[in-house]
Image (cartoon, rainbow, N blue to C red; front, side, top):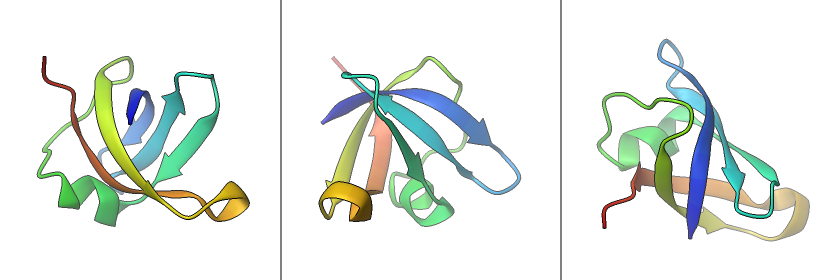
Length: 67
């Protein structure tokens, strides 16, 4: 699934993405670390993997979108 980085805190390595329908979805340090990223800037296109449904949906992996 694709999304756009919305917020990112380099100290906690957590933040949020915006899905293409505008829905915000937070991610934690574990999801950030799983993707092997070192930095993320708001506005970057990312690829995410999510787990769960509805209110329990969470990002488990975030990587940069490559074309």
